[in-house]
Image (cartoon, rainbow, N blue to C red; front, top):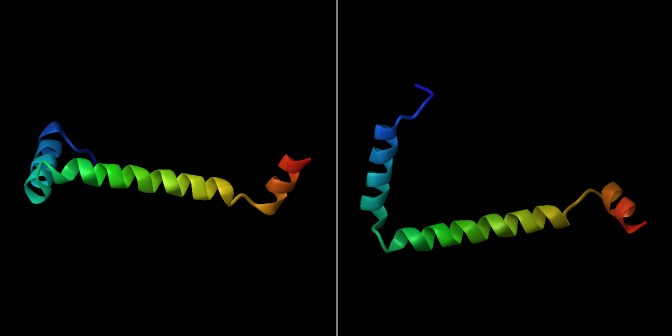
Amino acid sequence: MGRFGVTEILVILAVVLLLFGGKKIPELMKGLGSGIKEFKNAAKEDQPADKKEETKE
């Protein structure tokens, strides 16, 4: 049960296409990509204090 086959992936993609439509999917992926990018930038800026002091020296 842990592995997905080609058939299962195709069924999932077909359901997503039916739910959101062809025009909405690129917009959703663009939003998801920008969200991940912002999360990575925030995580990079939020380093622990010890590491920030080492990098300043």
